[in-house]
Image (cartoon, rainbow, N blue to C red; front, side):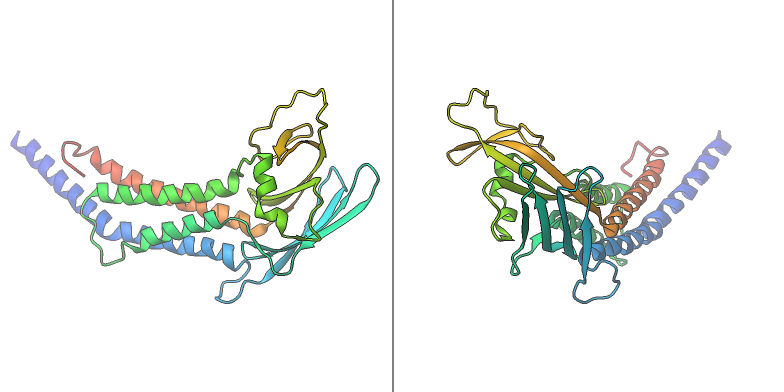
Length: 285
């Protein structure tokens, strides 16, 4: 019995020494690795293609679709800001060509929320610098959970586009950024989906007061379909045509990879901490 107890005590001493090393050394090594990865991710939102400080360079992307040539155009990105949009729309009914572009004094921020979540994750990591001594595993788990929450939200901003109602799109500041002003029977929405920048143009027509159609306002959606109805001002409107074009943004794919790798590192560290809890689950770890 004494031998068994001695073995158990020796085993516990080894485990406690390993756990102290994990808390004092490996945790900080992982935090530093996470900081480096997320700083690279942050740069993708502000300085695509550049690893140095300075003004974000402009990049042009050609909009395209394999299903239609009704909409063509070029979008200009400066970091995560849409600094110019030059769009041509061929009207289906009469083949009239409409051209509209951003006013020169306007920019449209694409994913401010995603960048903010990355910045918050970096702040959480830097608040525990190399001199900070973690005292318990629970403290590390709490930090990892907080960082993972921010990273998950940042990734979701890129992978899950916002669902908007048609009145919300109509009220968006994006509609007031074009010169000449958009015709009253057009709505435009721009959003990110994974590594693509998508532009949708909705053509509308007014429903007559004596219309026999059953008016049912559409709810929120990423992409509305023809036949969707909504009320705007004193008018009832219906979507007659939908045109969607998109372009691949390479740095968005980079950002998604960085988010995934960071989340995996966080989870691996959590798993290592949790392994020790199974050895002495009767005490706080």
